[in-house]
Image (cartoon, rainbow, N blue to C red; front, side):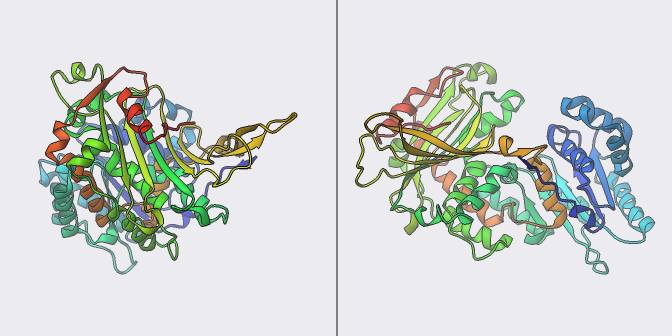
Length: 487
């Protein structure tokens, strides 16, 4: 068994101050502060590091950390030594976005910190707020002189923004235009936390580091590809947002299309951020957009039974979708990509399965196609299903898996997605972050579905909670002589 790897090069990073806006929100409490605490425990934070948490609540640094610890059961395992060391790096700042003048004290706090250490810091800003607040936040930072880089020490101001990045192409373009008014593209980090998952990063490694797969990664050998993001939970406390958005805008535009791009991209010339994102962009631009006829034939919408009761009224918002699309590149000509996501289903899993064609001529009875499955979560693993002979007289075939499981191979903790992405943000590495033209290409594809009048006319099938979704989705894919695949 191999030991999970934690790099310690982070301690050699330049002095860094990370300011989180919206620090008392669910994102910070559930993911960001826990990730930073774990990074402290594994010595992944820069040696000179300061965390400034900005929120509206009346708290101080100590009571803020207690507030976070009370909300996260997993953090109770963090040692008292780690908490004490982390608290020394933490400053809580009470600020009201509706009162820009209150942020003068924040500018002084950051400036005083630079002077006290006799060197300037990389200034990193995490917008863990609603997109509607990005404009006022960026303007506040500019007015307070916090976006000025320190050329003497080659320090940089950077901003990380959370999804949702817009709700259609037009709004995404407006957000990009807004951010580019204050920051250059190489200062903007648009996050999709799925990109930080170990198994998502492993997609490129399996493809490009193994001569077994890449020669077969085309329409001559691959029959179809499936990507499934299935959830057991419902919309919980996101009812208002979700009812305006729906499953397609919530999951297709970001997580699913980013995974599709990694599966379908050509090999980049090198591993620089620009080369990788250029190849992903080619795929996203080549997606076969929808028209009214395709919405009728290549899309199924569903809604779990109690959803209308939860939102308090009649609605056609989809909590499930399944669709078929194509990538109009020579490598993928004619290969369908089946994409689906839903809530209140029988299991929680995220999987990508690549289905190879059956042998052209099979000498044996019952040759099934080989399937390569990437299980993103839970039980992170990679499976290759192959045909084998059953022991005994005669020849009967049995399909079994060649398996690589993270838990069975690696012991110890594996860094969370947010730990990986926060460290990359500190290092100035944009490879796992989304470029503006990728966002816009994704929204162009999604808009061809959701902005169509045919989309609102399409039926929304009701399904029981704890099932695999609407029966109509099963019947729909069966018309293509296929079944949904999950391990």
